[in-house]
Image (cartoon, rainbow, N blue to C red; front, side, top):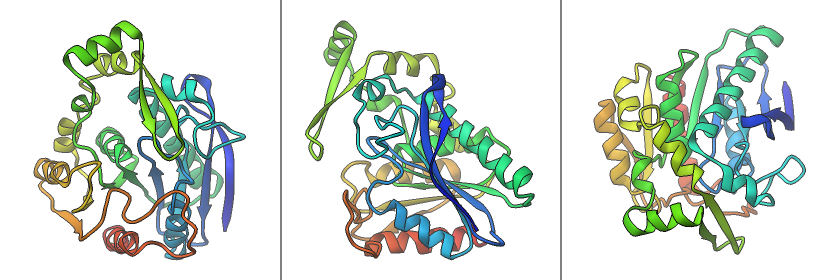
Length: 276
């Protein structure tokens, strides 16, 4: 077994971040996990999620986006709000590209394994996973957990957008950490510059690999209607987790040694899909 935690990688615009990777003996595939908005690799029950996949003989790699607000020394929560404010979708896609390249190098060159690479993204990470998978022949399966179906609609409009442009920054309150988290206007400018690339509908329609959308029917952060929209574009079905919220019963911190029941249902659905 190969296992390491908080290994440093150089992400977008040279900013260092960290990733974890465990590859058991005789792995079936390597799964790369992509966290969502205001997320990180150690949030909630993600470590237990990793353990479950490894137990079923899948390699598992998860990482912090380079501008998610964490640092190499403090990878949990958001000690670097300037980095958080500088984030943009093109950075997240680039970070994922870097991780896929590192994973490919690790399994094919260093370990000399001939195994596929799968993507598993949560929330915004689900949208990022779809976009990447549609444009990267190294990816052979992709799952979106409570994934977003659009990026543009998440930005403010009208007077609120004009205020953001004038002020150069807008803030989103994080109730758990009690931080005012900044978004610099460059975040929106980056979207405008990369609208075609960041079109989840277009990416979904061009997917040529097996795809699964999993969504909770009690999700108040990303409505299950977005999951239904993605499955229309991909001609697939939504795996609905009854009673599940946006994080499938998980929260930060997660102090149990067991996955939430709803997250356990997610894992079973993922394993059924990945093991086909």
